[in-house]
Length: 314
Image 1 (tube, rainbow, N blue to C red):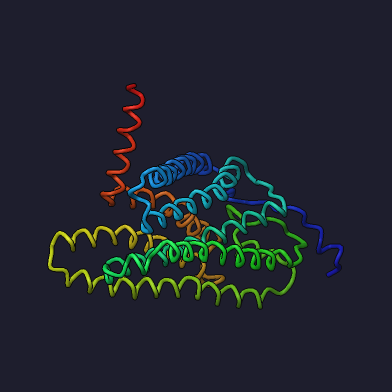
Image 2 (cartoon, rainbow, N blue to C red):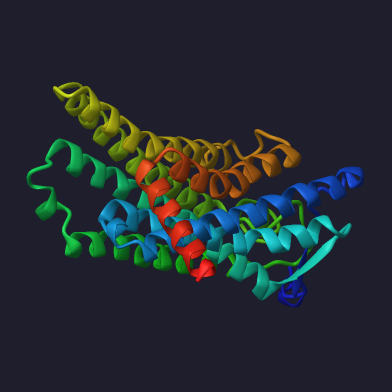
């Protein structure tokens, strides 16, 4: 194909659920509520942890970073998705699609690594409590957080640049709700075989390696908890770990269904629903999981609320 035709695509069209126009109005309302609740819930966690000095420990500072990721993830995807649902077809510029894919990779990958770091933190706290202040000191915490962010800045930059280095010569319709890698790659006018090998291998490593480390950590944690003589201590340890395990299951389960599925194994509509599972549910449920199941978070929230009411009284 001639080069002048290869450069003819300057923007893309996001189809969304245009095959089901009767559902788009209802979906718009559901997604709008989801977006607002997600922002509010994660913002509350960020504010509570930032303000409450007693929560300035690795466990909750990791959670603060996780909430920042969830806010960023939702802000990158949801506004564009709402625009797509409010119209039959929505145009997104080449650069806009690049930016959206970049930040989806950045925030999604960073969340993956943060969940792994949080598992290591719980392992160190429960299995080696006496050496925990040394094992998870401020320097180690900062290294883990910086590694989670910086490594994915580099991965997202490399991968997104590779995807958009392919020629796109039409059609320009992305049968999806946002610019995710697989549906965009389907529009490339050149062989993407090498990229697909890299992406599949990288996804397995990125998803499975942290997951295996989390699994091994929790096996050790389980044995350590069962050896505790105090029933109260066991209950507190189980409660602390339950929130993180719920988030891990939710995130890895939905992400695996999306990125480790066969290329032609599901219909486009099914793939959209699978993507919605981790783009909508995970950011929405994480604040509920960590705030409702964590007594220290609930106490800090009530303390902040009473402080605010006292200020209003005066």
